[in-house]
Amino acid sequence: MKVDTGDTTWLLISTALVMLMTPGLALFYGGMVRRKNVLATIMQSFIALGVISIQWVLYGYSLAFGPDIGGVIGNLDWIGLRGVGLDPHPDYSPTVPHQAFMIFQMMFAVITPALITGAFAERFKFKTYLVFLILWATFVYDPLAHWVWGVGGWIKELGALDFAGGLVVHISSGVAALAASLTVGRRKGYGDEAMPPHNLTMTLLGAALLWFGWFGFNGGSAIASGSLATSAFVVTHVSTASAALSWMMAEWMHRGNPTVLGAASGAVAGLVAITPASGFVGPLSAIVIGGVAGLLCYLAVNLKTKLKYDDSLDVVGVHGMGGTWGALATGLLASKAINSAGTDGLFFGNPSLLAIQALTVVAAWVYSFGVTYLILKILDWTMGLRVSEDHEINGLDLSQHGESGYSF
Amino acid sequence: MKKIEAIIKPFKLDEVKNALTQIGVQGMTVTEVKGFGRQKGHTEVYRGSEYKIDFIPKTKIDLIVHDEMAPQVIEALERAARTGKIGDGKIFVSPVEEVLRIRTGERGKDAI
Image (cartoon, rainbow over all chains, first blue to last red; front, side):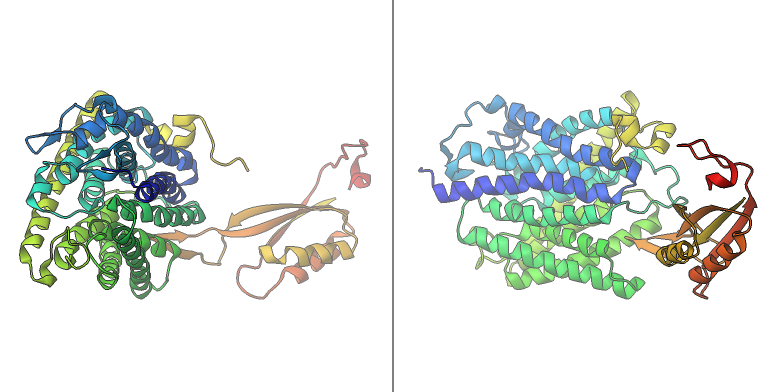
């Protein structure tokens, strides 16, 4: 196997693009919380870059992609990246150095737990969060990544299609967010006090960085440069545009205003939904996937208000719902004409893919919810999940970090 | 000496300032405040959550003037700040006990 410099360039650039999505997420979330919590919110995303990067190198990558044990987890052959060198890997990266694949995947492992933080924004203890990051990565992300993308992983063996992380990243974090909202509980004053976003300009900047970085998230998942990367790039963009419009329209008709937050949220919903499908569908399918995602996620977010659980930044409504729709849409719209290494979906004559997608969606839901719930219950019992009431009132920036976001 | 406090619509500040300086007012202090009277607020919606915003941004002007000047100042202020629409604001007049200029130590009317 020879290293292809074009493929390697694209993968390394994609890695950097996906890395940028984590601070992008930090800003997206940061603008939506109250001023007194802006730094703490940003920090939860930012610090994942520190914690998960090291965990990945030490053993996370091995668990996720290492030699298979029972279809369920990788072994520790690649502990400390032993054996993960600069030669291509026949299964994962036939034309790029193995380490390039490893570090590309690292960025996915970093951003996924950061997504969950939206659910417990403005009330979670930082110390407990650091431990949560390590436990969640080890017991939820790494196994799930192995099932879906690892050689021998049972979901991969079943033939489920997840090009860039509908199951592994979005459903896992969306469902974990549900478990988190339920275990952490509502913010003090939720429902009575006004808690509008303190800086939507920051949120929009974050959304734009996410859109930009997602070209690497999906485009890079081709693990090669060329036609598949191009196809994934194109449908990513189209789905996002479609979803931004559909959320905006839905809100305009329902509530009378086309909001900026709505357009940004719609865009993110479109990005989420296209993620599993991005290597298997064409542009017209992408318009459908995005359009439906914008509407479905808009409805999901409004439903949350009725159900009264405090998923502060709508991780369940956007990532859980968007990821689920995307995974199922893949079962409907995948086409071997786009990617011959894939499978045809229902609308191309093959109903069995949809059934497989549905089964694996349920498995991801159950596993992520169950294990996340358990982890949080144990952490609540040993370390406590929430800050004290006084700390919550004064804001996490001061109480957890001794800092102020703004000093004017 | 009188203290004149006026709560006005923010966009009227320049007009009011010009009207006052034209009749001889030499200084004022301005603060950004929030408040409501009979003017209702508005509703903002963020991702399905409605927020009633009751407090409306206003500008507060504080002036200290000689007793003799007070009536002209009030009249000029009122005229400049009025739009005729709800939310124009209010003017409060109160007596001032003492005024001191920090740089020179002057007191009373000379310090205004």
